[in-house]
Length: 62
Image 1: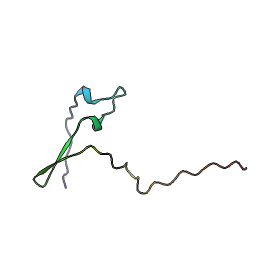
Image 2: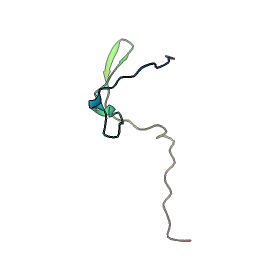
Image 3: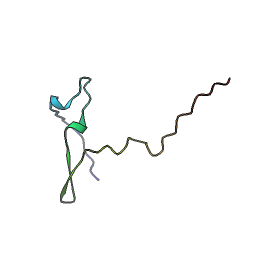
């Protein structure tokens, strides 16, 4: 586990969408873990996707 205070962040403007959102999927990031490098890029899900409640269907009744 790493605990840190982020004191500075730099982003190449080519990695930003028009609304300022970081388009991480277009940056082809790599991850270093336990002495090995891994490619990332496939979106696996979103925060809470495994416990997200299904939306209820609207019924035509009162």
